[in-house]
Length: 165
Image (cartoon, rainbow, N blue to C red; front, side, top):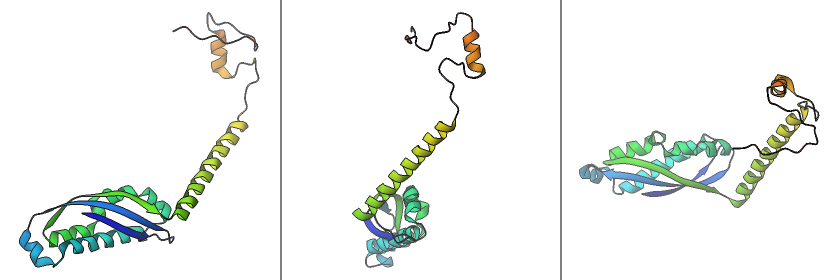
């Protein structure tokens, strides 16, 4: 069974989620007694679970936690409705989500801004670390290497050569 469910998050963002549900009918009599349209009942239960999940999260939380929508434990109403209708839910797969083009544009800009801010902060942090001047040996490790047997001290203008394999 395939399901397409539109969810509104706590911060009023709208997402369209697509699911594939794998199920097995294990009791025909239960199915016939439970409902005139058991598939519709399952779809409504699935919608209730997904709407509850989405309504409890912001857009950012929702995007981070979408992997939880592949877990059967996230669908208690669906599992109860399936049992009542004689079905066994084998697997629920969240195939993905889509939002409005405007929201996706805003999200891409936000992610880009955060990445630029992280890179700028890392660059500024690297600029605050004192660097040795050319020709100086930095720290104890440099002194060990410089005093190691067979090591040669090079001038700053000497070209580097590739090490032999």
